[in-house]
Each structure stands twice: as C-alpha cells, then as structure tokens.
Length: 312
Image (tube, rainbow, N blue to C red; front, side):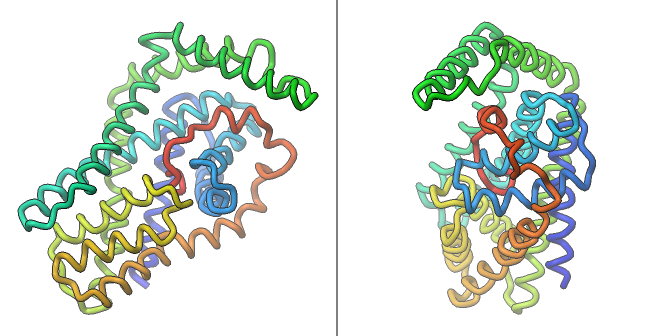
C-alpha cells in the first residue's frame, strides 16, 4: 500500500513538472489535464510506438484545445523532459561512482550514461537555439514544412502546414528561448521538482525491498533504480518492456540480493510504476479529445521525439 501511495505521489509530481514547464514557456493547462495526459501517454506510447511523440502529442493537443500555441507547448514538453533527464543524470553519476567502488561497474552502464548526458545536452541546446541561432531554426522548420508539403502532394492531399507555419513557429521558438534564458530561477525550481519526483520513485522501490524482507544499501537502491530508468529511456523496445525489469534485477543481484528476490522486486516495481498506471491511462483517455479527429499531423510534427517514459 505504501509503495502504491508513493507511486501516486510520484505521478502527481511528474504531472506538475510538465505543467510547470509548460507554464515557464507561457502555456497554461489545469493540473487535472496534465495528470490525465501524462497517464494517457503511457498507454499511447505502447500501442503507437513513435519515440514518445504520440504520447507527447496529448499535451500539445491539450494546449491547442485551449487556444494556446502548439509550438510553445512542444517546447514546454521538451523543457520538462530535459529537467527530468538532468535530475536522472545526477543519480546516474552517483550510481556509477558507487558501482565502481563495489567493483560492479560495466562498460555498457558508462556508455548508456554518456548517451543520456549527450541527449540531454542536445535537448538543452535545442531549447536555446532560438536565442543563439534563430536563422538555423527558420531553416530547419522551412525544410520540415517543404518535406511535409511534398509528402502531402504525393498522397494528393493539401499541405498539412500553413504557408506561414515555419515563420510563425520560428517566432514562437525564439520567444520560448528568451523566456527560458531570462528566468534561470524557474529552471532551478523545475529541477527541484524533477529531483523530488525521482526521490518518490526511489522511495517506492525501497518500500518493496522492505515488504520482501530484503536488505540493500541506499547506494545500491539508487543504482538499480537509475540504471533501470536509463534502460527505460534508451531501450528500442516500447516503454522498455522486459528490458527494464532485466536490468534492475541484474544490478540488484550483482549487489548481493538473491536473484529470485531481485527479479520479483523488479517485476513488482514495474507493475506499480508502469503497468497499473498504463491501465489507468487507458481509462482516462476518454477524458481527452486528443485521439479524435482534431489530432492532426501538425501536432505530431511539433511534439518532441526524445524518450518515451510516460513523458519519456
């Protein structure tokens, strides 16, 4: 019960991270809508594997339904994911140091952490590109607009993006970059939310060790958690199904937890942090009109594609 309550708190804080990030770029959505979109994204990203774009389009559509800017919403989602990854990177660096001292560090774990750090850096640069190189943003968006128009012409359909889409979206992106750069205190607050979110998730995992009467050091608990989440993000399998459980069980077993208990705990954690929330997301999706006819190609193009853990 304690683990389930901690998971509920975790997803509430996770939804607040998205809502706060959207607010930072000038997009406002209610807490309930943010929570519903987050839970729904878990289900959508499984049935429509798209690098996370399908689930994130739910947030974009929630903003569009309220008459707000879809490009700004997409940038807000990118900001939330960046803060999430930065917080996870802190945990991973500490985890690698712990495993190195214990003699259980693998090269794949170092490579995976490096990949996450590189991805986070690229996402951060993308958020500020409108401030540094607005002409580059305009050129990239112009190419996207032209490519979308060519594909539409092959299908004998009208262009999905308006004639002024690239120019308008560039302006929005520059405004977002300026807003992010002008309020560093807001970024610090969002990072704090992301760290609190991960702390709740780790606490939920820790209660499972207590429930199964297995002892583990705090460093080992965080290491198993962080590497499992890393596998969730980087796995080519939608939502890391099967991969996350294996990675977590392997890490815990390498730290002295009996293999059977490590596997059961990893499976129980995934049930609480993914499978049950995904089922809830399926039920909550009917509260969103995002899966209806209004969910167009533009929302999918404008939604970021990095990661697919809920928001990931």
